[in-house]
Amino acid sequence: MRLICRLTKQISIALLVSTTACNAASSAPRSRNSPQEPPRTYVTHLPKNRQPTQPVPLVLVFHGYGSQGKDLAKLSGFNQIADRENFIVVYPDGLDRRWNVGGNEDVAFTNSLIQQFQKRYKIDSRRIYATGISNGGFLVQRLACESSSQIAAFASIVATLPNGLQSQCRSSRPVSMLMINGTDDRKVPWKGGTLPYGQILSVPSSIDFWRQHNQCPKPAQVRSINPRVQLDQYTNCKNGSEVELVMLKGAGHVFPRGGGGANSLIDASREIWSFFGRHRSS
Image (tube, rainbow, N blue to C red; front, side, top):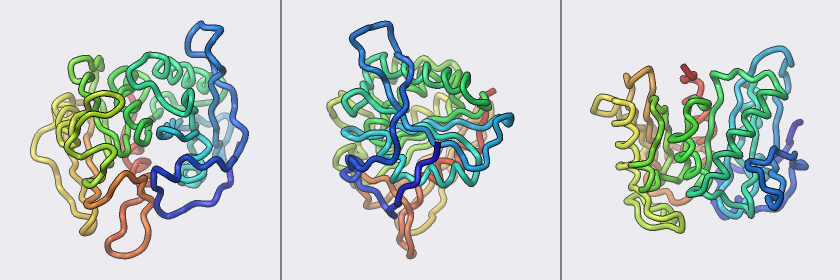
């Protein structure tokens, strides 16, 4: 199944509520045994040159609040990267266009979805990845605590670690985590605060949580891409794990898609795939 959609260079979260359809959604397995729960849906992109007998990576991409998987499939650019790098992308849909970060149903749904794709396609089980934006990024932080046995690496965009996960994070293994955040984000403040999901950590505190979890040595390797983009990387962590922060100076609540000029923001999807490509499940 291939989605062909027009791209933009930079995506505001407000644009992610577009209702333009790219493709009909597929049905997903129910994540709990409740007859009242509506069917779960998702959009799939299969790479152009996929060989059915060849194992390929699987990337799950979670939309933001008020959006749907088809919107992110259209605007993120992951389909084009998947065609080039030969991996499957799935864009799940949250119930009522949102993810319940504090509940268990969306974690269960994600685990069931992975199992369904492993049965349907030849998936490289060591190369399953999860990324998400805003509300979907908070879910990715939750998955990093609860599903790291199935997922090799995680990337959140304009999201941080919910405060309650500090003491409840159940991952017993290192977690490779990439975070992409704007310093002037008013919806998910750099310094943390209170959101509808509850208290969230600041961006630096979230990075430090994963650095300590992975036993990464200080200091970070700091690299300036341009005046607006800085990369802080913690490498040589336990079992080859890694923690990386992409700091978007002066940027707000956006999904950066690059662009031209010396002050352009980074292309988040390319950076995420580059990060994922460095990591495999043990």
